[in-house]
Image (cartoon, rainbow, N blue to C red):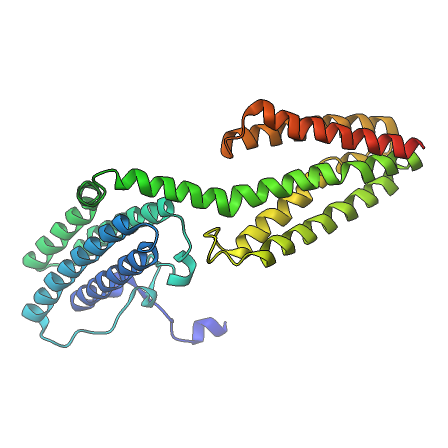
Length: 327
């Protein structure tokens, strides 16, 4: 009832005049150019060649903007109305800089492709509301240009990522992913899986009470996750080591530590002791071999060495827990 009495905060796209459509196109091109410059600035330190690509794409957007301004001046004069994407109901929006600042390179490239597709769709829709022949032609040309930006991006990549620079950037991105997510997460998974084996199985065989065992496993897993997360985040701010955001590393380490312990604690929600223990043992077997595989796959640890370190070590910890619980 109240919303019906208040003026709408956004305009319907179909209600825009031809002048307002041109003004919206101008502001949209300006915003996209700023976004590409922000991408370039964020990438410049680690991916200088890709930064040049987004610098050039920003210049392309500026060219489109100037063409639109010239058309507006010819038809409506110098006074361009202030209208932006967020003034139009149902119009696509753009994420603010702080939400895309830490995106990996491949995600940024995908986001740029989405931007061009949305811009082309906007021009296609705008043409249906324009009667002036010259303006319709301009918007149609811009729609084709936006769809052709993928070809432009490829051309710019060929220009700026020559001489092996593209492969170097891919290696850098892979290394950053490994240092920020895989390495802390793997360390957490190993710690959570192995360090909680002894207390959980010792409690299980000492009490043969599945609920008490689950509570001990839950507390051990969560406690270990909090401890590992804070330790990882606090001991290295990532600025000198290049390991990335301490918050991201801490979350990766803490979450994976908790998951590693909960894997063989959750079966003790089953009230039958031997059934729960058998399932927990199977989970432990899968966990240890999965960790060995991840070490081999992402950390390039020789498979047999990973098996010796993880599977054999974890089996000894498990055996120690069972012996202590039966003592």
